[in-house]
Length: 103
Image 1 (cartoon, helix red, strand yellow):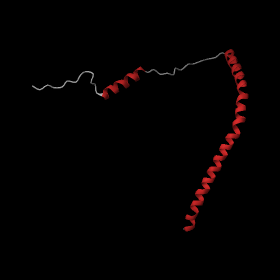
Image 2 (cartoon, rainbow, N blue to C red):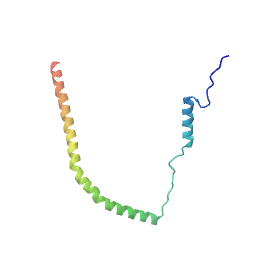
Image 3 (cartoon, helix red, strand yellow):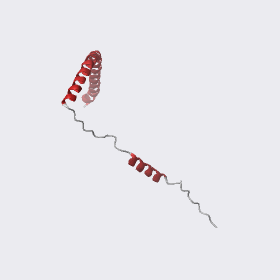
């Protein structure tokens, strides 16, 4: 008498388990973005504009100070980069010159 091995119920093929997991996760997800239509009255717009102007007036000196501090460094980096590229171009051209003279 020959006994055959019976697979237990929990021995589900991994592909089927993966497919089932993907399907369940897709069905469980809801769109996170909900579209909201906001209509402001003129009074609300005025209040909002006043707050934004006050906020921007407080930020403007900080942003200007940062710009004044960082501009020389950025210009120096950009200039160094441009000079470096030109030197590399010149080196490539000089390396090709013996090739051109030999022809």
